[in-house]
Length: 186
Image 1 (cartoon, rainbow, N blue to C red):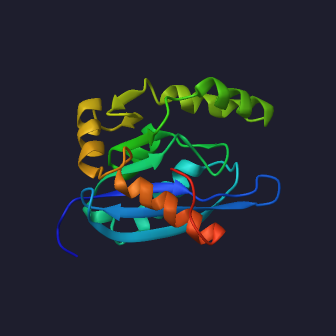
Image 2: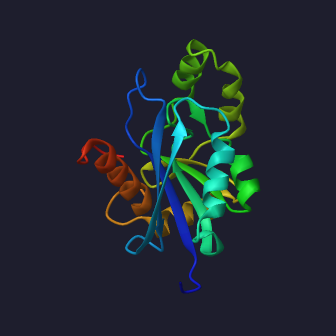
């Protein structure tokens, strides 16, 4: 593999919160908005704890780890109510960690869901993410990088979509693997 700098973009696949014990995570490694270098998959517990550590371990074991310059995730929650600690993910990987989403954050809704599920302690991780920022039409949180540099990474990784291409592809691939075909938007 050439010594280029890449980004790992992670999204979860669809799951039935009443039936499924695990959710699929898909990672897509890109270099810019038009070059895909690889795909990674793993499974994580639905609403599980330690999601940050699991993501870090999964990423660290990847053959792509030496060339990564950032990790992007689709939102602060994954696999249901598993809340990613961006600061810890950045620290564990020694990489910028950026949470990107199409809509402005709805922290109050997530906090209510965490409370209803008996997981109120995870709300502190949402607050730890700090303020949200804008990059074009998407919102993002970042750790291990200042907002201007995170915005530059998001913009460099975007193609025709508002979302970085790796996140869009991770979403499509996860849906295709779980449902047999993709539908909807990331």
